Length: 140
Image (cartoon, rainbow, N blue to C red; front, side, top):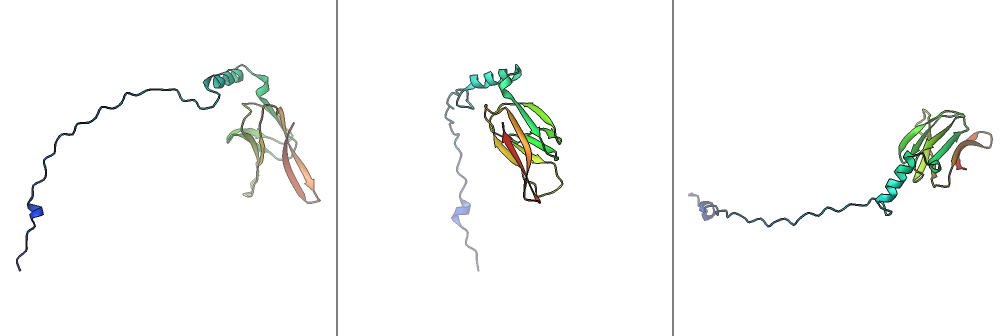
């Protein structure tokens, strides 16, 4: 049985015409503001931190027998040993949390929201009943 040839295979490929690309519009660079307060507020806060503004010091006191990892906005600030106090110099926004330095996998953490009014934070232990210890964090 003879094979039929298709006319589609016999056609030649179309010739390509050079395409004219449109001119791209001119780019305009505009500053992007990260915060609603603008760039000046960020500069002012950085200068305040660099010059030692006293309202940005946060004292964290550990009154427990457990060491704690202290974090601000997911950044490790330091480790507080038992009955130790440290002063951290940071911008008081967001939250601060503490996680105990224990070998257990079932570890919970303490969390507190920061504001400029908070000067000190205390980590303490409270006993509920005879066998239940609760760790809490409070602002002072």
